[in-house]
Each structure stands twice: as structure tokens, then as C-alpha cells.
Length: 422
Length: 117
Image (cartoon, rainbow over all chains, first blue to last red; front, top):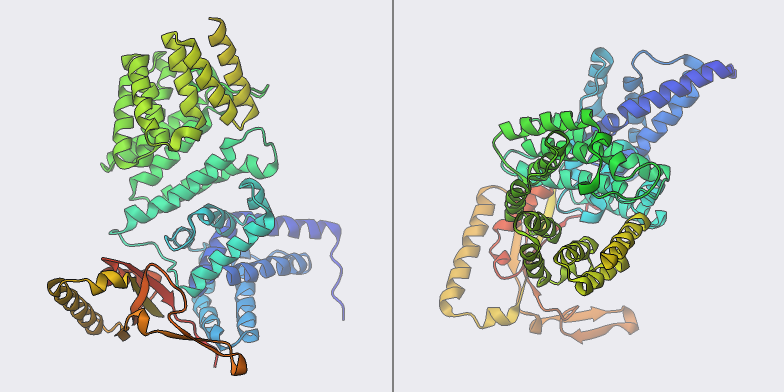
């Protein structure tokens, strides 16, 4: 007997239900399957099959009362099948399937999938995993991005990205990388890698607004979602709150920074009316909560720097002396030419362009800044303020040559012309 | 899971060690082995003769070549190993960090692969 063919309405409602379950629960379901099997790839395959089965079954049977438990049961069957097809090496999968049984019963009764996404994220950002693949791996495992979309976001070939993701997942399984939240002893150092990966995803989505492809547009929003998730799950750590605040501060200035009409507006020239006040308020509240925990860290300091900048919306001025102090604190925990360059700019605002240039010269001794565009832009600005036109033009040229963003390039060329004619 | 800890170091430095530091190193390895045994993680462990004693065989049958020397000439050489039992990679790394070999060289952690029977 053949099954009745579902009508278009039933089909679309099943689609919607499956899609909704996918969006809401994908990461949680995958984390549960991956943590129990210690095998991200097998968990992904099993879950993909479960969603495919849902799309063909639900139009016929109707959407089950607990879709998550249904999906997990289907995925569990796939894990067992896969274990049977493979050799004795995968006996573990059968044990895993048995392990999942109580979890499924609980979900069917309580309706809530236990949230193990943080455990999965710690495995994805383990020090034994290539640092360059950690952010992509999180996007795939926790948010369900496919390799093609991740490759587009990180400007790599889809094949190369897919290969790196496969290799990383194989390493998690074969090297026995643990999938659990580390204990308090190592938590602070390990959570940094999770936060770094999220920050990289955000920066990647932010860095190139010219790129209006879907892949990149969603990246900043997804990164903020992940930051919210980690801040909620690791709620005894201040740094996840620091990261979340930092991302919200930056996001609040998106329209002022890159007006819809095009162009690039540096922070100091932005119209504060164009900033998103609600996001700023939320960021301030979150940063306060982090500060109350009494353990300062890199992301909290970065957020505090943003907080000083956005205070301009109320005071109309920027407290550069406070910024110099915050940059000094930041330099004590990270040696970064980017931070040092920003500090020199703040210093120049306090002590004059000569002091700022002297600081920039000291950074230059490190040689890595030779190809860092904002370093040359800062130099050019300070020479121009000193009235040294030749040195300013030289530095502007270096900065323009190093710029990769057309809007930034145009902005620098305008500044350069202005400096030459003043 | 079982893991192999491969201890790499510069042999030349090892041969030029003073009797004092030699003795110190032996003491450190002795204590490390004891700690591994006492915690039930020890599976096996040996020190190797230096690479000038190595002989490599490549190819089979009539194509077999017997070559004087190690598989690869490197700055740091394999000098010994431990096989340990650890719950996961973090557990293995914790023991690798304690290994005296990390002081002057590198300890590589490799999971043991289970061959289906």
C-alpha cells in the first residue's frame, strides 16, 4: 500500500515545522549528539538524515507533539545504523545510542533539550585544533552553516574550507578531544579561545561592508547571537559579558560608521545621533555586570574603551586621558601593534602630535606594523597636524597603498588632498 | 584512550651534559615514571639509544634497502617514549606537560588507533 500523498498545505506546514525546529534546536540537538558520541561529523550526518526524514514523514503523520524528541530518536537510529555498517571500531556508537535513550525520554516529557552547546564550543576551540579553523568550526557545528557559506565568509575556496572542517572534526574524534566545559582552574584561559573565535567571526562580517553577500551580512548578527549564548551559559565568567558588550557597542555605530549612502566615517567624525542608543544602553548594563565580578580582562577593557568613546553622545567630548589609561591596561595583557597604535593616537590627543609620533616610532621598531594601514594613517594625521606636509604626504601614500577597502581608500585620498592644500 | 608520548630532544646537548645534570635528569624521569605508575596511567615506557645506532629499512623483497641512520635527519631526535592511558586528550596533555622531556625539547602526544579486530 502506498502512503497518501500529502496536499500542498500539509507539506508546507511540515516544512515550516521542520525549518522552525532546525533554526531553534539545531545547535542544541547537534551538541547533544556530538557530546554523547564524541564525533561531530557522525552527529551532523545523523541529524541531517533526521531532518530529511522529518520532511518526508511529517506531511503524512502530522507534526509530532515533541519535534525535538522525534528528531533525536530518528538521529539515534541513524547513529546505530552507521555503527552497524562500520567496523568494530565504532562499537562506541552503539553504546552512545543506548546512552541517548534516557535523554530522549526526558525531552519527550519535559520538552527541553539540555543545552550542551558550550561543551561543543570548547571542543571546537581546543588548543589542539588549528586556530584558523576554530571560528568556522563553531559556525558550522553550533549554527549549522554549510561549508560553502563559511568559505564565502572567510574568503576561502569551498573545497579547502570543507577539507579543513573535516580534518578538524576527525581530530576531535580520533585524538579524543574532550567535549565538556573545563573546570574552573583552566576555564579563564580556555574560554578566551571560544571568545576569540566568536570575535573573529564578528570581525570578518564587519570588516568588509562592501561585500553585501548574504554570507557576510548575517555573520555579525550570528556572532552576537553566539556571544549572548556563551554569556548566558558561562554566567560566572566576566569576559563573555565583556565580549558581548564590545560587540554591541561596535554594532550600535554601524550606520554612523558606514552610512547607507556609502562611504567611511571614522569614529571621531561620526554623528552621535546616528548611533543606536538602545544597543549602547544594553552594552553599558552588560559591561557593568561584568565589572561587578571583579576580574578584569581583555574584552572588558576593549568594551570599556568603546564605552568611553560613546560617552560623547552625552558629554559631547572624548576623555582621551581615560583612553590612554585603558590602552595601557590592555597592553599589559596583550602585546598588540593595533592596540599600541590606538594608544598613540589617544596619547597625541592628550600630549600633542609630537608625543603621539614618538610613540608610533617606538612601535615601528617592531617592524610588523610596516603593512598595517591604520598605523600609517595615524602617522599621516599627526604629521599633518604638526604642519610637516612632506612627511604627511609620504605616510598618506603608504596608508592608501595598504588600504583594501575602497571606501577607506577614498577617505584617505580625500584627507591626503586636504592636508596637501592646507 | 591510550596515548603515546614521543619525547624529542637534541642528542648533542644530551651527550655533552655534565654528570650532575645527567643525574638530575635521571632522577626527574624516575619520579615521573613512578608518578605515572602510581596513578595507574602507565602502560609502557623506554628510553632509546641515540640516532647513530639507528638503521632504517625501506622497500621490500629485492628492492629492500638497509640504510645507516634514522628515518629523517632532524634538529631534535626521538629519544624515548611513554604509552599512557588517559580519559581524553586533555588528560594526556596534562601528563605530557609533566614529562621532564619538555624542559629541553618537545613531547608529541599521539592517540593510539584502535584497529578493528
